[in-house]
Image (cartoon, rainbow, N blue to C red; front, side, top):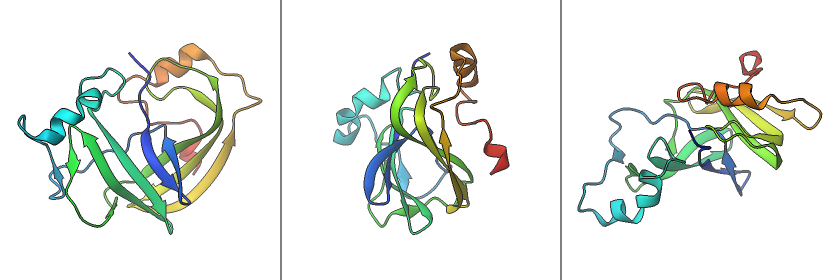
Length: 162
């Protein structure tokens, strides 16, 4: 398994990333999968065919005015033109890394950063945030790797408390 590329995120007007991959809704009319002859499919070959992107696409998201939006997709899926799309289908906790990598984990989103912002989202609305400081904690690389196997990579200790 391989460390995964982050989703893009605009937070408070600044570009950053999420060590997290929110799901896309099934059958939404704004999403489409380009066909084999579409130019947009060919220009994103690196995302679709890379081991550092199990999902085959990369999203760009924005948190603005307490709302969580999807603003773009590249790779396997695309977002049709229009306004930013409120991620009303999503409820969960976003993990937003801050600072330097303290512990690199070559699996999923397991790497540990100096700090992380965890933002709890309910049906597209940000209802709570907290900052987790990892600088004085011990991290078990093997446990981090196991926790980041496909299907478990979007669960973080302490998020049940949010």
